[in-house]
Length: 235
Image 1 (cartoon, rainbow, N blue to C red):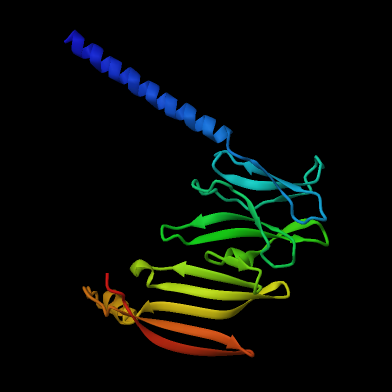
Image 2: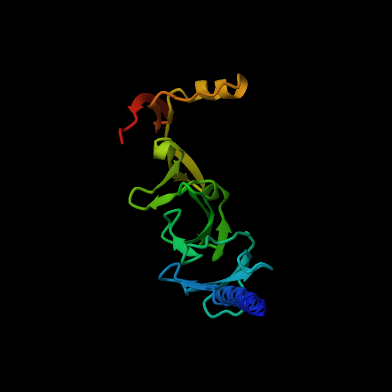
């Protein structure tokens, strides 16, 4: 009996030490997270330093202090709150989101299991030397900024192993985004199936394996729409 008690106490001690070890490791990890980033926005400008302001929970960012050159006082504080994705090696990065030759600040603020991601983007304003949050860019899904044709491409994956999706193309018109192309693919009979399931409480076990792709293109200010049937690829 005493031997059994000694074994139990020993196991409890190991368990407590293991929990303490995990807690200490987590604390050390949080303390060593990268909180400061320095980027060159333009070759004619001094580098900018961005300091993450952590919240009560060290995983959360409640603001970003912006320093220009060797200045010790923040030029501005970006107040967007977000929780960095744990798999992202770098919380902040730069990209020329509006194709004006100046790099802009960005971070991932939302990510889903399908791989869809959304970004906070602060555009650099060369007139003031500050960064301005752009709400339109935050609404885009997985934006890809192509300087070659001055376009922003998005792709939002749905279900059916990627056969359901939305894809859009935007161009800048002044300081606003303008949609110039939209492609949507969905199940061909999805509206009928959803109606039956919601209104009549009928479970539809099998739907048409085909999909419909709707493409809308803006040409000379006029939208042109086409639809085509897309068969599901055999595994």
